[in-house]
Length: 409
Image (cartoon, rainbow, N blue to C red):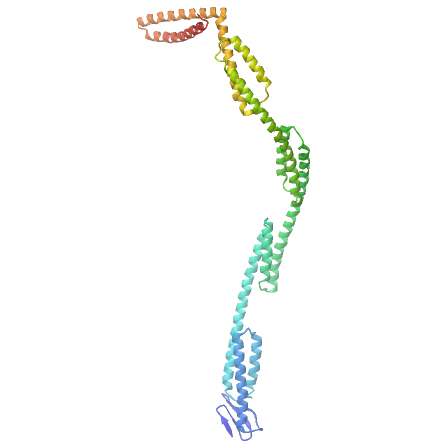
């Protein structure tokens, strides 16, 4: 009989293995010596050890599913429980039990991880839905549209939830996108209608602008062009393919008119500048008549100057007040000279002036006598009142004497 610490072979060739539950029959060996029998079944034990070791590493280092791991463990356990090997089978059972615990722990860990991922995915999808519903109300058509497309890509990258939850969230998400698309489509349809209306309006404005381009009625036409420009801005933009062409025609018509007006105005400005030079020379000639020495000759000379003045055309508007003011000043000086001469040579006026002067002088003399009498009597209040009246009469007298002096009196 042959034996080792974990098994033996009896005289009949039966092989036994020692376990915690006592000896168990491994099998019968008739093909060789007992030592060969033990060696054979020990090799089968080593094979189980290797197989368990490989399974332990797979569970630890790979993503082997719990189900596949359990099937592999059950397969090895059947071999261990069948006692077809010689070795520490109880130790293998302990290793298999620990491996079951490891697989169970991994399964629970993965379950918790999946639950966490699912919860995170739910929160992420809910956030996407909320943002999509907010974007559905936006009028920022391009930015909101691009963001919604980005949200779809993000959604596709997230794990699926349970069917009910995933379908409900997707329904809300899809509804928000559809609502935005519907609003955007309606907006651009309205915009297209507005742009078509703007095109028709601008076609009319262009037609009028082109009809006015050859006008020489400078003021009213320029004013009408300003009104047309205001109408153009108020009309809004036409379709892109029409807007630039319409604007070029509209602007071109204006350019033709204003270029012609500028040319005419340039010629007129040159002519008015020359006119100003001529009128300044006449104003200088007129100013030499002042102060007036010979009124009759000065008046005749001024009439001649004025006739030449009237024959000259317009001068620049900003220069007109100054040059005309110089002529008016000379004219006023001549008028004042005439008035002075008339007063000096008018007998009736001289008589009236002398009479008024005499009356005022008598009144002044009388008031002076009354003032002296009042003060002598101690009546200062009356004297002061008479003095104020005297001051007024004296002023009138002084003015009358001055007028009389102008008559040569």
